[in-house]
Length: 502
Image (cartoon, rainbow, N blue to C red; front, side):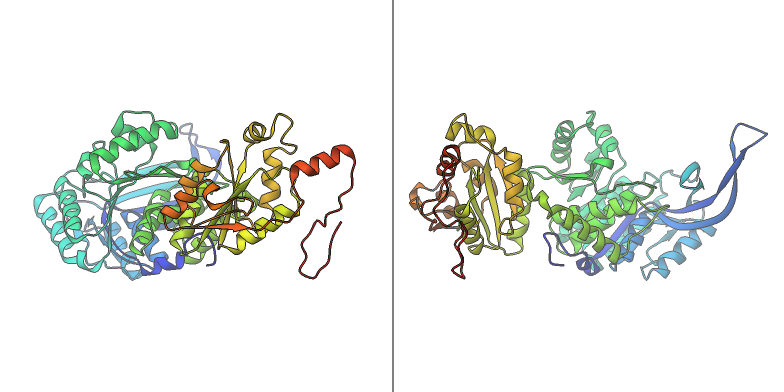
């Protein structure tokens, strides 16, 4: 995939061990045409039934659907639901020998009744009491037997009894000994039990329950996430429903990934899909940011499906491709935060990232020349654009002639420009310090020691380029001529075929 974003095909290399609460999800679909004469409830005429792996089983199913290798450690009953779960895991070419059967414990069964795309009722059949010590022993033994075959462990906690204090402590400490990442989808209010995990993936309500903070916006969520990181020592991947995801890591700025779903049919299992893709991404060598980005795209796709759905590798590739096209379109105009993430992604790919800046009030051939030459110095070019306030401070109250939105749109439409970032300060120094481009480009009317940010870029191993300008061209001069009604005598385009435009 030739894009800003990681290739989902990499996830076929994933080897993930899932430990958690397995359940069978049963969906009964039908239609409603009347209200029951016995009570004021709809009568559902069932015409179709579907059974799927749920809970930790859905995490496994998603990893398998993407082509990864997965095993599941879970407890099932010696009942029909347990037998079906075991068969489904085997049919997905996943290791079903890690399941622990308990004759005294029924397999968790959730039955949903659906009319059209509307869920009418859910019935749960389950036992979430503490595991007997003998069953707990078998879970721990299976974990120790299997861990060597996998690169990442996913702990899928649905509070159904599998992830006891002992099982959690053993799995996390063993992973730390082996240097293997462990990612937790939590249900406990006290996150301290997850201390030592690499990443905790709560939703808003789970993070609020832990922290006692409302978590209604990113500000309060960031405070709550900081508390969670202090308690657990791990990163926090916060799922935000219609607002996407936010990744918090100790010592790093928050990364906010906006939601990609335009319509939602069923959120059942969307968190499992996100967990599966994120774990598969980490197991395949992706960074946390890239794994979260792909997981966010996948979750935005799966909620368009009915039931506890999974994604194929092709569907995920399409979702990431759509995100790529959206992000690389004229929304090349972006915030400093988004630009910093993009620059980091480009640099991880080994690309050289150039930076130049200016007011670009009335774009002329001189601007075109410097942008083309700047792009020739690097693989990607970021343009820092002075805001309206900044231009007025530098050029006087009559400037700019064009608004920052208009100037940014013109720059973003140019083939030489990959990103446009508006800044308010007189100089782009703080923006350069944040982006840390590999190449800094400015006109040759400056000396290198006069170029803002040159020392910063060079200190990080970067280069400074001074580009020759076309003579006689300036925005100030152009505005003066326009006001006086004069014609331009200087050629507007430097043309390799010796053609000139006046």
